[in-house]
Structure formats: structure tokens, C-alpha cells
Image (cartoon, rainbow, N blue to C red):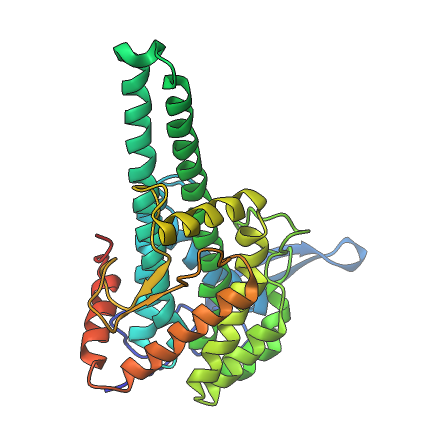
Length: 357
């Protein structure tokens, strides 16, 4: 049975929010529990006043931003261990959908983030393999022979490329999550009216956030049109439309400037696509695809490849959006077919931290 989140009621995936049921601009604590202060009044008179904390939109946004940051802070760090961070991000997306099936974008994002985890795994293996070969050649008797230097250089290039890809994938994965997870949580807890009324309050300097993207590239918390439309359609239960708008926000507003506009990233993606389609060189290319299963590889009917064109460009918005929307259509078809139990089982596995293998 499809699920829908009800604020303030017990839910297996989310605890009751501390401000559930408290209207915005009302006191957070009863006056009887607030602190009495002595203050200096007019004419230097000593008077008494009560400090009453008030629930503001900024205060609400901060709670959800902290929740997102705590979810992906690994051993106290927001920087290292990107594979563990990715596992947590994928699980958090999965839990959003399991708690409320209207969040169809989040269900699809659980699979997409899991696929990023597969890419991170491949990049790590590629980096390690090329480092091992490079070091072995450098220490062997062939190190001084003709062509050895070029061979070592090739391995070093592949190693550096894999390391760069690993870093950029992890960066994009984390910052997309920090952007969009709190949006879902605010909508879950406060509903559409407060969401649309208070969305502009998210972009504020009143509370600190972890955001390592330059403001000129992508300022934090900008109340963009695609966000409003995506959640408006969720409120109207037009789930396919909601996915289209949130996918556009994800791909165009967030990932394009922080990931796909990077010239080095574009070069690496181009080399990967050419090698994948032609088979030249072998051993390093990773298929650009989305599997709608908990595993990196899935059975037929649950895998969508990006393109079989050797010159396809994942960084071009139009080409990438075609791929994303095909995935969204396939996900919607599976949810409305006899395959739904399989899809749900996969999302539950991702929610439990399993799948990237």
C-alpha cells in the first residue's frame, strides 16, 4: 500500500520533529519554562522580562540543514570517506520515498546515488590498479627499456584521472544532497503552504551551513522556480510532473555548474564514453547507466544505458536530461506494474545501506 507521511505521528523512518505542531512565529517553549531576566529599563530602573524563543522560518530551515549535515558527517568529517558518505546519502533518499511514496524523485535518486557509489567503487579500483602497475614497472628490470617511461606515464594518467573522477563524483553527490534533502524534509513536516511561503527564507546568513561551492557558481539555498514547481506537483499528487521538475533542478541548477561544467571532468567523461563503445583501450571504462536495483548490475528490464554513441556527451544538458527522463519513465512504469515489489525490495535494501557491489 502506498505510504504518505503524516507530521507529528510515529514513523519508522523519521522521529517526531521537535517543532511538530508549533506555528511559525509562535513561542517554542511555554512561557512558564522560559528564563526570567532582570533588565535595565527607563531611567535606569531594574525591571524583569522573560526571554521567549520564537520559531522562525530560518530556525526551521536550520533544523533540516543540520539533519542533512549530520547524516553525511563520517567520523566527524564532511570531507573524507566519500564511499561511506554515498552509502548514507543513498539510504536517506530511499527512506524519504519509503516514508512518503509521493517523493518519487527521491526514490529514483536512491538508485541514481547508488549508481554514483558504483562509480566511486570503480574509480577507486582503477586508481589502485594503475598505481600498482606503475609502481611495479618502475621497480622492475624493464624500467630502463625503451617504451617503459611511456607505459608508466599512461598508468599515471589513468591513476590521476580516476582520482579526479572520484573526488568530483563525491563532491557532486554530497552537495546535491545538502541542497535537496532539506527541501523534502521541510515539505514533509510543514506542508505546501509553509513551504512556498518560507522557501525564500532558506537563503539567509542567519545560520551557518556547510557549502563548499563558490557563490558565483551556485549560491546556497536559492529559491528557484523548478523547486517550487516540483513540490507544487507533489502537493497536487502529480508525481510524474514533480519528478520532471525536480530532475531539471537537480541536473541543470545543481550538477551542471558544480560538476559538468568542469573541463577536466568533461575530458574524462569523453574518454570513458569512447573507450566504452569502441573497447579501446580496455580495462578502464565504466558503463554510464542506471540500474533500478540495489546492485550495480541488474537483470534485463532494470538497466538503462546512457548512449551507444561513441561521441555522446553526458555533460550536455539536453543529452543528459533525455537519459534522466527515460529513467524516470521506466521507474514510474515499474512502480505501476507487477515489478513494484522488486523495486520496493531494492529501495529497502538501499535504505539499509546495502547494494553497491
